[in-house]
Image (cartoon, rainbow, N blue to C red; front, side, top):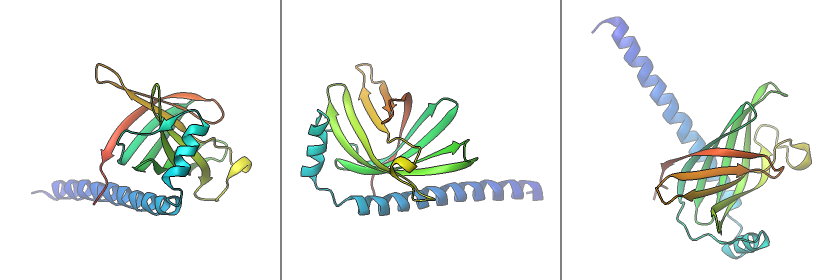
Length: 177
């Protein structure tokens, strides 16, 4: 093999390693975040669903998910970890007002509605500054996902400010046992 071929293979392996390492670290962060948020019991989650006029979720969404959506010209990528009727997410996007990438973590509760599974986001927090509440300019995400009779998955996000966006859903993998 030539030196150029070896260099290209080395770069490809490093790229795959970096991507694997990044995904692994993101998974570890999500698991740690979920452990902190896991203190809410199923009864409290059912209460939240009923508060919004939904039922307790019956669908199995356990696993790691990726939700991609755009608001205006800004693309958001949310990585979700779901176990049972709760979970956590980390959403990355570029904030043009701050001229930097932001990472927002949220607690999630899954509910059942007449149009599909609803994933309600709560307590959005900037992971770099720990800003929450009114000082944070990010509205909690609320995803709705349903499978159509032809098998197609339809999803959208309506955040707490009322912004509506179509969502691309990707199942990444199941939970490790």
